[in-house]
Structures are given as structure tokens and as C-alpha cells.
Amino acid sequence: MANTYTQLYFHIVFAVKGRDNHIATKWKDELYKYITGIISNKEQKLMIINGMPNHVHLLIGTKPTCTLSDLIRDIKANSSKWINDKQLINCKFEWQSGFGAFTVSQSQVPKIVNYIKNQEEQHQSKSFKEEYIGFLNAYDIDFNSAYIFNDD
Image 1 (cartoon, rainbow, N blue to C red):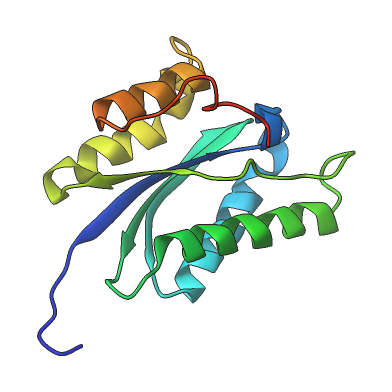
Image 2 (image 1 turned 90 degrees about the horizontal axis):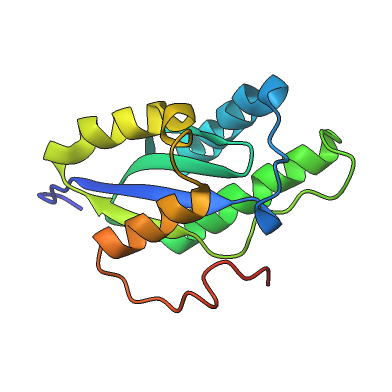
């Protein structure tokens, strides 16, 4: 697309099914590298990835041709298959269905990068549920709290 110029950043959050603490410290960096490869192969730009044992945060720069839901579907499907093929946990690994996606302006990229980089520090004072609901409220997204953390 000649003469098309964009800056599209998304802060993506998704959780392990049931928010179980299945992402182990000893292999999370390998998982993050694998996810980085998926994003790169889809010709999108990963700015940062980090998370906790029960969820992952990504900051992704996308091209206008990227269908975000397809990209996240591919990340989740391929990374869960990778975890299961490597038998990194003693049960079947699954991501929870759905995800959070929040737009980020260029001026906020350094702030979001820092936030994602410091996940361990962030979660000393708030749970994942508190964090996630905080995002939904900050972005003025309507949600029903009865369903926000159901395990479909």
C-alpha cells in the first residue's frame, strides 16, 4: 500500500486457562522467544513481552493489514501446542479464550514498555484480576463482572 503510513500499537493481555500458574520461570524465556518468532513471522513488531505464571502481556506494533484477532489466535494456538509438545507441564496447557487489547499512542509506548517490563513489581500490590479490571475501567470498556473471569 503505497503512501500508507501508520503507527498502530496494541497492549495485549491474555491468561492461562483458569489463571493457573503454569508458566514456569525456568522456561518462560523460551516461551517468550517462541511467541516473538510467531509475531515476527506474521510480519508484525513485538516491542516487549513479559508476564507472570498465569498471564502474558505483549506490546505489538502492527501493520494496517494485520487482523488482531487472527494474530492472537495464532500466538495462542501455536504457543500452547509448543508447550504441550515439549511436555513442559504435567497436564494439557491451554490459554483462556479471549484476550484484552488496548490501543497505545506513540507517546505512551515508553510507559507501557516499562509497565510490562516490571510485571513482578506490579503484582506485588495487585492481583491479575485487579490489574485486568483496571485496564477495562481505564479504557472505559463495558463488561459484566459475573463473566469477566469465567472459565469457558
